[in-house]
Image (cartoon, rainbow, N blue to C red; front, side, top):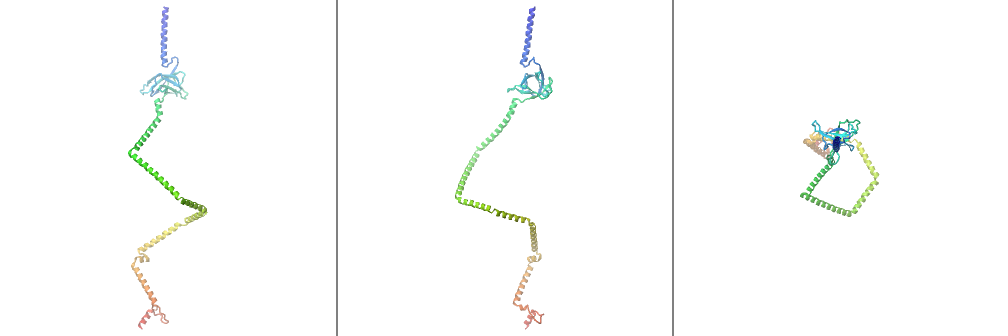
Length: 333
């Protein structure tokens, strides 16, 4: 009986030890250590991008815990609450952030705890601030965005170049380009001919050009030698211009304008027949009378020259007689 009890006891102990070992091993494989005290915290995310249970929780690159549970909130908001456990000796201040990051290029996710500068600490079970790091895809997209933009610009440039090539290799464009190069060739030939002609002229007229330059040099020398006289002439011109400026030219111009106005007024009166000159210019009768009187006066003067005795008679006794009475007496005799 004693032996049987001992055997059952041994079997029970083995079974218990096996169960304990199995539980411990299962938890160990899941990353849990039953012999280490842990504290549990939570964080709420809009999305977790592949974060799983048993994913590592890191602090400054060191694993300090793992994700315990992932589930949706009960408020139908679609947000996800993640529970994770960390070692008991790790204290999180109330500004700490639970950031989901990628651990490798394969996209394995973990939670990176970022401590803040606050001196107050979270209580066990508190919900931390959450944040999601850009995924590898997002980071690659951000890094590739400038390259993508440059590639698009390059494609546009290539498209423009292809359009130019298409335009150039058009038949009409080929003809135009050929004509253009022909014109350029002719222009160059004309320039060469012009250059040869200029060279010939320079060689032929070398003596004349030399004399021209000599004359120019002589003129410049004369100008240098007569610099004082030229300065004096310019000073005199300046004095004359100052005198003209100081003179009352405005008054002279006003007087001239007044004289011209008076002349215009006088010409207007003459044209309208006002005054003696106007009547002479416009009245033919007065003009004819004056002309007749002038002719008669001229005849009288001629007759006086020919027969002065008719008009001049001197008598010592008869001062009252005149030439006409004497002419009548002579006629009677």
